Length: 208
Image (cartoon, rainbow, N blue to C red; front, side, top):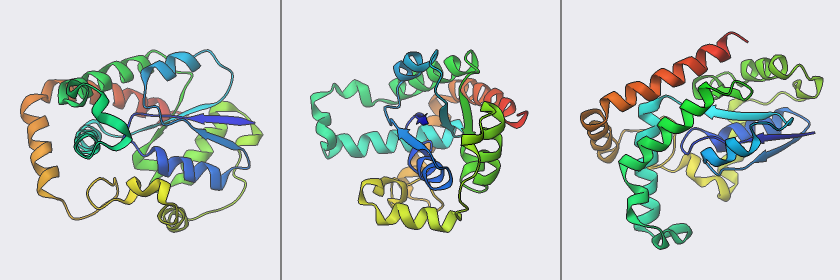
């Protein structure tokens, strides 16, 4: 059995893929395209498709910091792309379109960041109920500490725990504070729009 996983950047894709791969006895394909086009491609497929979802503001702030970092250092050959691709305007628009699509396509399983980073067993229980498939039952127990330990050992997943770019609790940097203030000042209505869509998805998840 194959299960696909993909969500917007900075929404916990790495962590959730580790949760699933270590808790279930199935093949997890973590696409990490962070693209609406991927959702459109898989919308009518029969495979289970899991999407990590995080609150709008922290995800937007983290996405902007990460994109700037990657572009400044020309990582992943990013200098071949137009600088416009890394602006807050583009990031906000991507988030709006992505969550508007998910609101209208309830066939995807939504995994909230607030749950799979604190109580992933609850997420796994709801995943089993959502697809009504015994292959998605818990196969082995694994603690959050073990998951983080495995991530730290895997250099490929270093962004999950990076001191500046990681998503887990750490001392707040001046860069993060300034970026958050920028979003709140310039994109408050957009953030509210995105969060409203996310709240609809959260409610859908909670009702499983």
